[in-house]
Length: 82
Image (cartoon, rainbow, N blue to C red; front, top):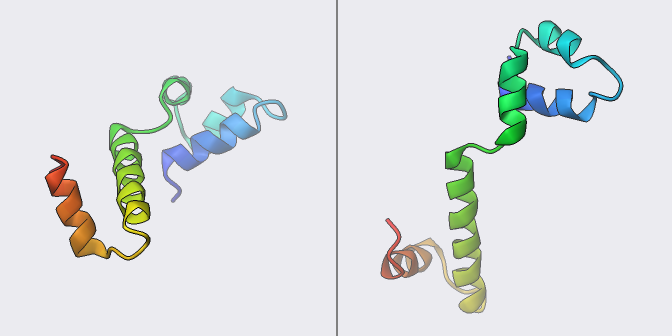
């Protein structure tokens, strides 16, 4: 079973071809859920993961590409991340 966000993405990408109501019925989703997802497609967790990934990449590049996970972790802690 696909997760709703994958289905919502499909509906968004094909809304010009098919009825949103029909696709929601086919995927057994609520239209209100789809419209709520359109307003905020990424979860808070996904947004936080993206923010941390950006920091990790910055520390890795700053190290000249030599830091492994223990050093990156230490840099994150030093920067105040938990």
